[in-house]
Every structure is written in structure tokens, then in C-alpha cells.
Amino acid sequence: MFNNNKNKKKTDAMNSNKSGKNLPSVNMISEGTQLDGTLKTKNDIRVAGTLDGEAKADGKVIVSSSGNVEGNIEADNADIAGKVNGEVRVTNKLVLRKTAVVEGDVYTKTILAEEGAQINGSFHMSENIESELKKKSKVSSSAKSSAKKSKSDSSSSGNQKKKKDNKSEVSALKED
Image (cartoon, rainbow, N blue to C red):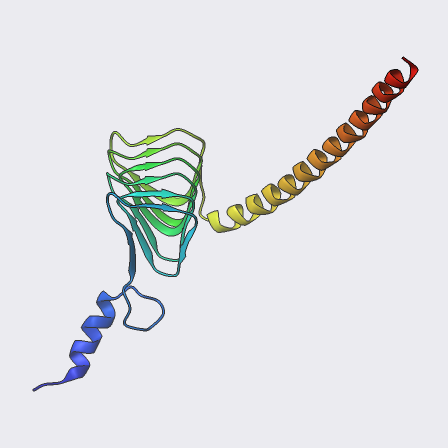
């Protein structure tokens, strides 16, 4: 009559928490709240306020119509109704509501876009989007390290030139 096993099955089915513990499964940034930095979780993220940084979730990222993300989104699934200024990388399903505005490149396996949704960037869709994202991250990592190296090389050669110019000025002052 009072079998707890039935109730436990219902609770487990409703909980998308992957840790197996009975913890909240949605991380929320409420309207009027601003978070600066990277939000990384194994569960879901809901943004109704402002996230100035990255959202990385093993679950779903939801950006409500009042939500604003100034950074990249990486997730298994995403549902966007607000604004995103950055790349959106979704390994499964991306839903763009009619009020969604994405200013950046989109990578996804499947998409559902309502009339009025905007994507201002390139769009990449593939069955193997995970492998494409891994390739892209390797290329961008090597490009970043090359850019840092060339920047440090050019700044050090610029410093050497400045040192030579300063020596010339000192020599000219001594001659007077």
C-alpha cells in the first residue's frame, strides 16, 4: 500500500541531475542578476539575467527572453530566447525562439528555429559536430599560441629597436 519504490522511480525520472544525488539540477541567474566569469556545471543552466563570460553545461543551457550572455555557450542542448554575443556550441539540439539574437558562430547537430530568430555569424551543422568542435578547438589553440609567440617576438624586437634609438639619443646629447 505504501510502497516507496514507486515514488522513488517518479522522483528519479523527474530529476535530470546526473550526479545521482538529490541536488538541484538547474543553476539559475535570475533577472536583475549579473555574473562575471565562467559558469561550468554537469547539470542545466538558466540565464534570465546577464552572464558576462562562458556557460559550459553537460546538460541544457536556457537563455530566457530577458537573458543576455556576453560569451560562448557550450552544452549538450540549448534553448535560446534572449541575446548571445559569442559562439554557441551544442552537441545535440539547439532551439532558437522568435526573440533569440545570436551574434556569433553556431555549431549544432540539430536545430529548431522559430520565425524571427536571428543568427549573425556562420552556421555549422553536422551529425558529428562533436568531432568538428574538437578539431576547431585544436586549431584555435595552436593559432592562439602562434599569435602569442609572434606578438612576444615583435614586442621584444620593438624593445630592442627602442633601446638602440635611446642609445643614439644619449650619444647625440654627449656630443653637444
